[in-house]
Amino acid sequence: MSKLDEILKFNKNFVENKEYEIYKTSKEPDKRILILSCMDTRLTDLLPRALNIKNGDVKIVKNAGASIMHPFGSVIRSIVVAVYEFNVDEIFVIGHHSCGMCNLSTDNLMKKIIERGISLETIETLENGGIDIKKWLHGFDSVEKSIEDSVNTIKKHPLIPKEIVVHGLAIDPETGKLDVIVNGYE
Ligand SMILES: [Zn+2]
Image (cartoon, rainbow, N blue to C red; front, side, top):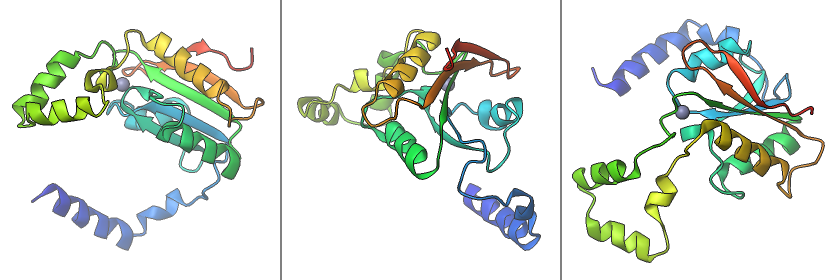
């Protein structure tokens, strides 16, 4: 069975058996919190469990490394919408130890891209167009520093109100233990 068929089969039963009922909630995050975290598979269920978060409590934005790549990119866009449209008043940037984006080898990644059939010509065309692919793919050297940078980008953003509290935390992807990197109340 293909992945799609497997999911559709399960989904049909899920809906028919009304298994969705326990998840019913609204679009408004009850805890008025937005979490920016990493797409790491170990955090999918662990992060909400370890923070006592259930469906409807928070907005969660995820990407590779919990990074803010650009002050007017999709992460900040999501935060702005969450603050003004969904009454979010505290933001938690939650990076994690042993993140795949920490010390990511861009040379190795570029090699894999070429091996998978992307031509050097394509890479050159992009780079001639002003896209520094290695820089774009590069993660960070220290998760703590990356978290601090993200917190600062949010705090200093011209479209984010000053009263919004921004915390920075690092989560252990094995135990769920949180370390406070930036306490937004201080
Ligand atoms: Zn990660």
